[in-house]
Length: 107
Image 1 (cartoon, rainbow, N blue to C red):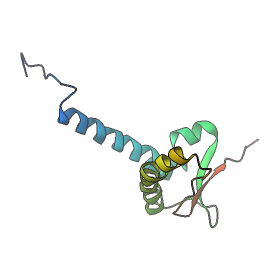
Image 2 (cartoon, rainbow, N blue to C red; image 1 turned 30 degrees about the vertical axis):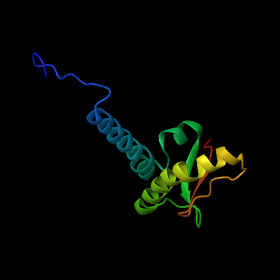
Image 3 (cartoon, rainbow, N blue to C red; image 1 turned 90 degrees about the vertical axis):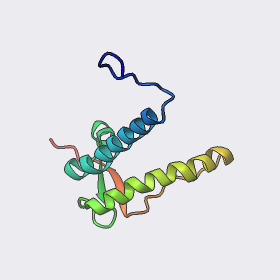
């Protein structure tokens, strides 16, 4: 701190830790809390999709949405690199019984 101004250094672990924490927090709000409230994340709202339970098409609960969010991280870390390295045609399967469907158009 110099003259009352905090200086952030990009190479500082504190800056990277803060950036990672903010990114994870924004991801959680978008994929879990917004999906709980509106049945869709921001991208799904824009594209006219919604998140529903695979078994009956009803609104998924908070625990399922958290599981889906965590599974997304697992998918990115494990399957995406394998898919890119092997050029496989594996599609993401949702492990928590939640699926994405197109919203019904109201007239």
